[in-house]
Amino acid sequence: MSTLTNEAPVDIGPITLTDVTGQKSHRVSKIPSEATVNEVVQRLLGPMSQPTHDSEGRPLTYGVRSERESRFLGGNEKIGDVLQPNDTLRLMPTVDAGRGTGG
Image (cartoon, rainbow, N blue to C red; front, side):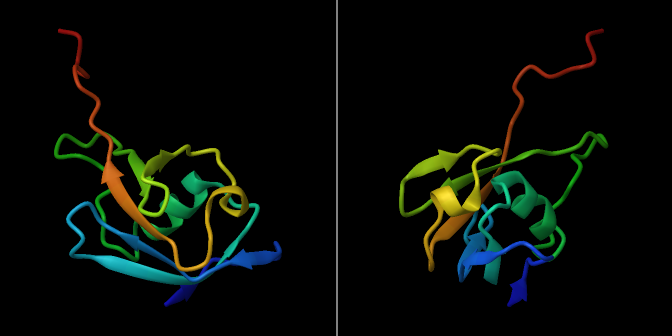
């Protein structure tokens, strides 16, 4: 279990983040309520051993689905506005259909 804190007030936790398969999970004891969903995802990709680039070297982006609310969370949403203690979030790679080299 890790803690995502600097000097911001810590209001939310624990939170469990799982990968798209549900086989990998990471429990976070405390998350600053002012952190955004994107900030939390970026900090947890490493501990969850999730890839940050695709097979062609392009950066991967991830969406986050709240299991409690059954919806995808916006990357700029504040943790304190969207999460409750013991929430489970599912980390899902975002597929950019049609993205290509333009050639």
